[in-house]
Image (cartoon, rainbow, N blue to C red):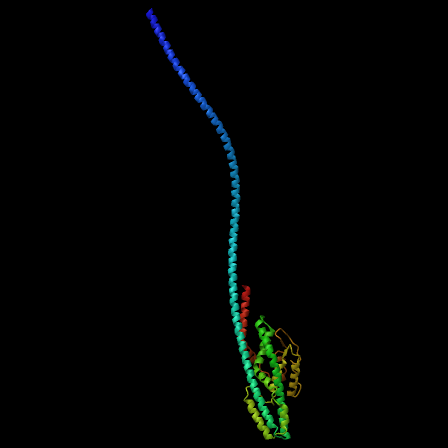
Length: 404
């Protein structure tokens, strides 16, 4: 029994030992679990705190995100506006480039036009300079011819003075005196004619310069002043030499002395002196016309009848009627003596109703001895050919410059 009790006590001890060991294990496990619990609780608390912080951060981030989105939207709107502004600026830039190109083209065109105008002006200046030199040369020739005629005039004066001194030594009979008187009357008519032609020549010389100026500046296709100037200068150039000669010879004939001395000269002496005078006159530089022939007087009268001037008071017309009456033996009516002026301009030239180139309006007595108008026009055209070429070049360049 004791063994049994011992065995039972041993078994009980073992049970108690097992239970104590298990208790120890359970208590250690409880300690461990409690520690784990505290750790997990602390970790949970930290996680909760972290969660709260993350929630706060999330809210903050959401607010920041909304702010950024609004800012981004504003930036997008700003970018769109800037893009529109850039497009406008780009279009304006293209327009400015186009305007700049157009202005550059216009500037180049203006420079080209200015160069062309400068070249044409230089050509015109050179042509006008040539025309001026040509006119100066012609005036020099006229001055030289004037000096020559003055010398010839002085020589003729000496010849006539010598004849007058010799004529005082002789007497003549009534028949030779009457013949001499007739010759002297012929010389008087010739001198009157030469004086009239000299007066017309002086007037035409002053009007010629105005006509040349009008021809240089006139740009009308049909200008009566230009046509009248050409026609008149043709007649003037044809008789220029005779008129210049008459200017210096008109006052050189001592007709009164010849009239007085012819009464004291014999017939042979008069014939001898007339022959010497004819030889000396034939040696002069102007054509000689016999004093007894009236054709030249009629021609000169017909020339002056159809030309009138603004500054004249129709004094030449009455002189022409007297000349025609003395030559023809009856008062021949000339159509141009009392005509009105048909036109006038700044050139100072006016024309009558019957122009020099109109043969239908001339009387038979005045137009029978007049030279043909075609010959006079040819002489005028020959003189003005170079001048008209210059005017045509200037008038042809003027419309081209205006069109450009």
